[in-house]
Image 1 (cartoon, one colour):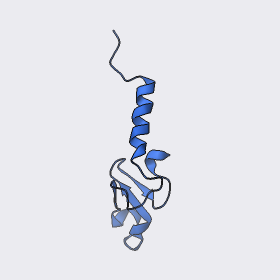
Image 2 (cartoon, helix red, strand yellow; image 1 turned 90 degrees about the vertical axis):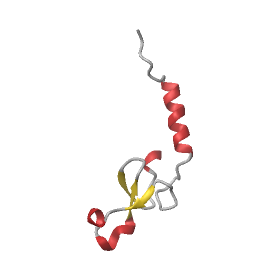
Image 3 (cartoon, helix red, strand yellow; image 1 turned 45 degrees about the horizontal axis):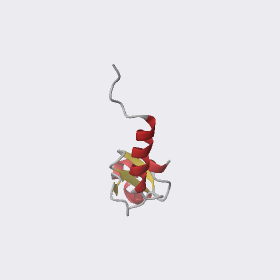
Image 4 (cartoon, one colour; image 1 turned 30 degrees about the vertical axis):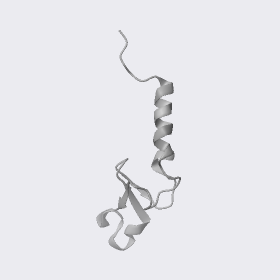
Length: 69
């Protein structure tokens, strides 16, 4: 029979709910933000990149949130 996958409407609702709590722009006010490792962006430039623990990726500070792209 059919598997128990979520329907497209349910997936869309889940994504929208997830985006609700995310900020518009990536900065250190986000609860998922962390400092990038010095070897990732250079020791003296670590404040230009934000590590997102939710998406496990680096993002430029003040650019659009990874979850809202």
